[in-house]
Structures are given as structure tokens and as C-alpha cells.
Image 1 (cartoon, helix red, strand yellow):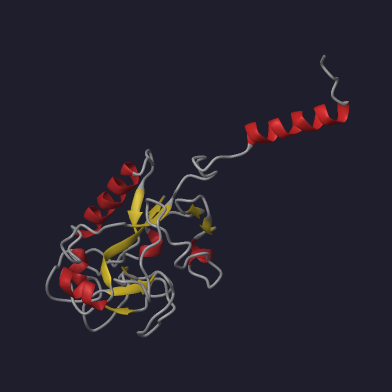
Image 2 (spheres, rainbow, N blue to C red):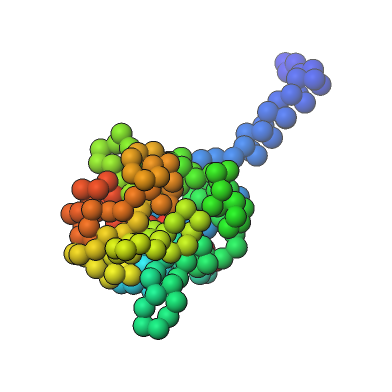
Length: 221
């Protein structure tokens, strides 16, 4: 003998089943495609990134390995005047935004927002291309120094000494301006994501000794 279920119970069961079917899973891709990340690894030759072009290629290679294709990637790096060419400003290389991290979270609407105190960067926002956080102050090893060669406004850091490790071709002499992706630490501007202090040198060993690992920011134009 089969008992008829109350109509209200039947409707409730149907609604619950619908929720199960439509509930997102952990594998659901982010609503926005990644357009900003910190490199999970550097090229491995200190601050010799192969110049701006080599750094851009590194960004594209890592992004494509992470499944993001068909985008034009630029490293957030400034460069000194050279070969009759004017200085290059990092802020002018990266397009107009908006930019999203690997989790689909908006980190900056545009260039002005990116260089304001209101951006959503920091340790939790500035992820690598795999969606993982980069070690910061208090982690072992600390890798929060991110190469930029830039001032807080995203322009080339003019100084009496080298600020770009020979325009990103030196793995020995020179120095480069670096930011703190976690907005913590010491230096001239310890809370700056793009212009905290100069590195100790340009070799991989010196970058690691300063609190970095030859990492840099990548943006999709």
C-alpha cells in the first residue's frame, strides 16, 4: 500500500533537488578571466629578465600555462632612457584596465585606481597565475619584493644610481626598485606595492637576500 505524500512535502523536495543541481562547485571557473598576477617564478637569472621584451614573454608563457590565452601581456616594469629612446613608465605599458586576479576578484578598475590607496592589492589580492598567495613578511622564505623600477605613481624611478638593473639585463651589478606585494616591511616606503626600496643587487642571491626571488607583476592589456 502506498501512501500519498502531502503536496507541500513534494514541493519542498523538488526545490531542494533544484538547489543541488544548480549549486556551484569548487571547479566553477571565475566570472572574470585573469588579467593580473605576480609571476610564480622568475626567469631564474636574477634581475636579468631579457629586458622588457623578455619579461613580457615570461608573463605570456606563465599565463598560457595557466590556461589564459589570446591576451597581450605586459610586465609592470619601468626602464631608463637608452639608445636614444626615452624612459619607459610601467603605468604606460599595461593598458587601461580593469584587472582581475586568478580568482576573478577585481584588483583595480583603471590606472588611477591601481595607483591609489583604494586598490585591492595586498597579499590576498596579489595572487600568482596559479591563484596562490605569494610568500610575504612573516613567511619562510619571505618573497614580497616585487621588481618594478618604478616610483609610487608608476613612472621610471630616477636616481643617481641604477634602479632597473641595467634595464632588466643585469644579474650582477646595479640595483632595482622593488615593491612589497603584501604592503608590509621596511625601506623608504614599506607599504608601497610598487616602490618600497632598492634591492641589494641584481644577482639571484642578492634578490633573495633582500626578501624577493626575481618576481614581477604582469598585466593584460
